[in-house]
Length: 93
Length: 127
Length: 161
Image (cartoon, rainbow over all chains, first blue to last red; front, side):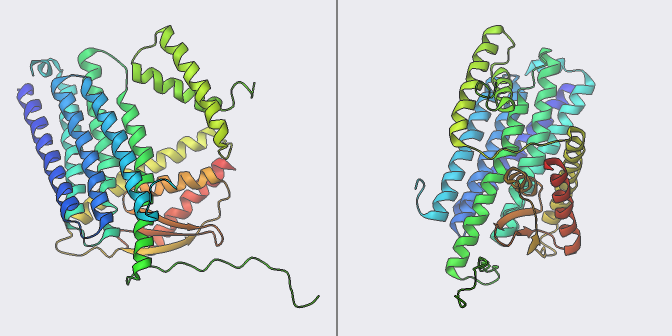
């Protein structure tokens, strides 16, 4: 009984995070202005990280943790670079 | 997926509840990103996923690994600390960039830049 | 002592992060983490960050707990606003408040706290006027938000004395 509950609830959580990723991707593609797109990209990164963590719980494999950390790092750096570009028109001054 | 059956019931309840709640909060944040009307209100949506969602799902992962493998190393704390420290920086920079761009384009409804206070200059008239 | 360990807390934090990443407390890991921590503290010395001395550990813990409760509360509030956005548009708006904090690190911490709690977003701080412009998602009454920011300010002032 508990195994069914766990498997189904993790599956449901993954579907929900997948939907969240889809919405963020929609905002990234559609977004009326550049800052909306960057916000969508940032949310997409965060949700991808959460998705990797749920995969980690599902398979009890700690390698997913490392990839989640790397996704979070790259997402942060890229969002910062984009934000800086919007503000100044160049990344490194 | 056989290992998950080894979880005792109390841990299973905690893991299920936290994962479902965290995923629901992340989904609500993305719905906000989709439905809120303008950029400044959309700026609030991702903080739902980064505060509530990340904390809940990382806690679930911690509980799961700690009970299953009897390994009391909480390396998920790293993700929580990292995300909580970095997201404000991103959002602040994006907010400032949006404010700057809106001011350059002279959009309506955006607060104007306050004139810098003049420094207390000594009187130059009387010499 | 200062020449060897310019930032002891930073070195200790880096050591803990290194041990968590390696998931071990073996002597080799600790030695490597100590070397990394001390070396990176020297690198940080070149950046000359502003020093500040937080005091009153107990007060800090209480402040952290109150911020955590605020995060939970505002999570629920923002989720409610988002779910009913189809029926009623959120009356969001910009607010300005005067903030009188000298310490740079306290200011940075205030910015992080305000952006991390859903519902408020830090936009601009004018150093000359000491006034802060921030955006609020659901502005039912402005007084509550301004009072919240003032409470954070008071807490941070106590901490960084």
